[in-house]
Length: 580
Image (cartoon, rainbow, N blue to C red):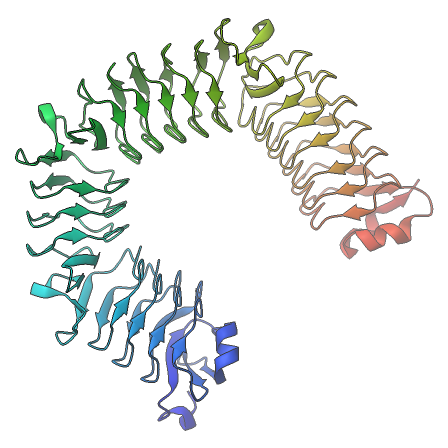
């Protein structure tokens, strides 16, 4: 560090692995000096700079510690968000710490709030997973950390704003703010005193160490996802005197008494008869849950209700469910057995996304809406059957696929699917991760193949695409490692981005004369590719189109067009150009 800056008041002193760069620094500093030997640097601020601006050091993976000068009054929105900052000194000149200022500073271990701070924005310290010490100056009139509770409390309202793994909740607290203990992984136990009336949304989200929770009689409101992804929860209990919530029949869950909505469960929960709804994220992230019975009283399974229940293998739905909402069972990677009742009318967007062990689908007669990507990534499906009396969807000709009747769009396929010649489109991700699919015939009724339609179909070896197809979405054949040959139609105008990404088995490709553009990374990582024939019609080629194609020997182009293709291709490929 240069000696001339040692006594300057308006400098930000920091330690970092490398020089810290930021547009904010360029605009507001005289210089940014750095000493590589000591890993210490100073940013000399221009006169009048009183604010560390919005996003000034966001995503700074190099800065380790920072000392903020006494000229600064405001730390802006996201100023240090997503940095590796482990320590910070906030001077007593700072009056405002804005929204998300230190959001996701994973290495930050302690924080001291000086007396001068008058406002702390929402999510200012959200997701600071290693925080172990929080202290507010005793002279601060707006916030406090009473009783050395290791938390920030809004004094006037008695609302707990932020806590850490060593926090406890004083019995004067009336409200736990949204996200107060968000991703507080080290929090192993917490006592909610009977002064608390509200627990905010995601208040204890992803508190992985939390094993039990007791809701006192005073609590009258619990926000969505308050205990989402508390995967180690074994016990949930509601005080018998609570008039708003209950855990009837010792069910190890929180139920809204008036609406009969189950809002939070755990690995040892069961759903009592009488519950009518399973709330948003009620069992989300409960990755030790292996099976669940949904009683006949339940009418709706909410958004993300069982999302990322990775060990869930068996779901039994008894009776009257009319809706399985968006992402309700998304990423339940072990889910094998599932039944849809006759009462079911709606299956939401991504409802069963990436349930890659699901073996069969039986769509009942009353299902009238299936959201986008509802079964995307269900790669182990062997059989799909739609009730013959369903007017909205079908599996015509015993095709073992799910088809939207009115449009002829194939929404989901299985490894035994046959595409009927009435299908007009193969939807986004229709066969995604269908690892058992070895061959498929695409009929000439199909005009469009959606994005990721055959993504990661590892056993698919060859494919002929008819001339009726005019559009193939990006990533449609991404990671089809076994694909050795492909016949592209003369109706295509574009080879989309990442279309054949890492199709390592492809040896040669002929681009049809109709193609004008080859998208970026279209053949990235096609390690076995030796020859590509490109026609005169191609006038645009994206970046990295043949990157990591280690065995590419020749790019065959029309006679007299070497100059034009040198303009389109990276210089490293010029030596492979061959006129023919």
